[in-house]
Amino acid sequence: PTPSPTPPHVSTTLERFAKPAVDSGLLSREDLRAALRKLRTAPPAPAAAAPEARLLTRRQAAGALACSIRTVARMTADGTLPAVYLRPGCAKSLRYRAGDLAKLTLGNN
Image (tube, rainbow, N blue to C red; front, side, top):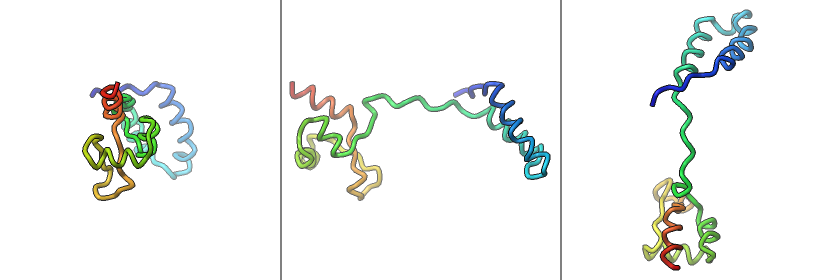
């Protein structure tokens, strides 16, 4: 992705607030210039994740499916509802993709 240009007012504001630090010797002019260069060439902010890419906890999944947490656990165990581990082996890191929940609810209608 091409870097998005930093608006000029951001650079000006940063320079103005950093001036006392430069004047007192806490920050060198070269460091300030390097920071401004990095700011100007920073990659654009990532786009918001699509709703179907959201990850939900077991409780949130149960709410979305209008069932109990235990039912969600059973559906996960029998393979009906795929789950994602944020940290493999850590049960508390288990999450469900919103898209998978949507497919499941659409399949039941």
